[in-house]
Length: 248
Image (cartoon, rainbow, N blue to C red; front, side, top):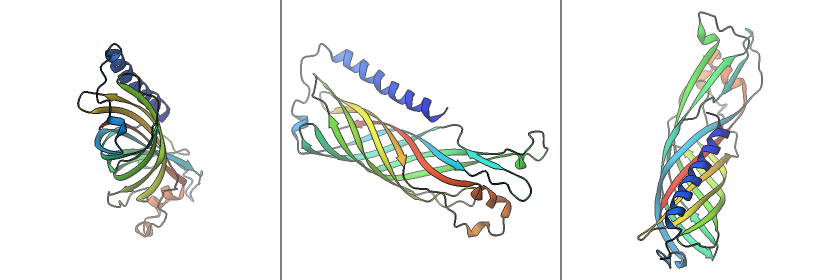
């Protein structure tokens, strides 16, 4: 599943949840938690899924023995997310939200030798793969821009930045990624006012700003064959879709 299809599915999931709850509350004129949005500060937590991807730029390097390797993430699998949240009310329609947490997930990078032959007996000279598991410590800071409340629902948009640090240990494999990154984020969601809490489904798109490929690889000095994979890649950037369910 490519990232474009994944983004469409994430938006559709949010819309379906919103439509179902909006239909259930359309005739409900009783306002749940009428003063919830007037508090200067409130707290909560969230659980959800993250879909991690890597935007890889290859350089078409041809090695001395005639191999030309290209790397790509061809499939995206869901991971698990958990966060705590603090929300500061700036104005009637604007809130500042910080939600540190942990994102667990993985990316499978596939390598293909474009000058290879799929019928070779030694398949490692034609294709390889690498499973990169990540445990991200994340610190997202978002400006939440909310519409006017309608009955027991209130849609909103977010824009912000997120610092990520991968807690996973360094691995001596084809590609090694730097631990730290900064990502720009945009998202959309809806506050649903329940009798005892707010339920807020949200989808967020995150775009990494840094080239996170690690080129300082002393572990590959005696392994020129594995080093060619790092040499064949110009740039690697994080790309992520996060589906979150807040309880406030």
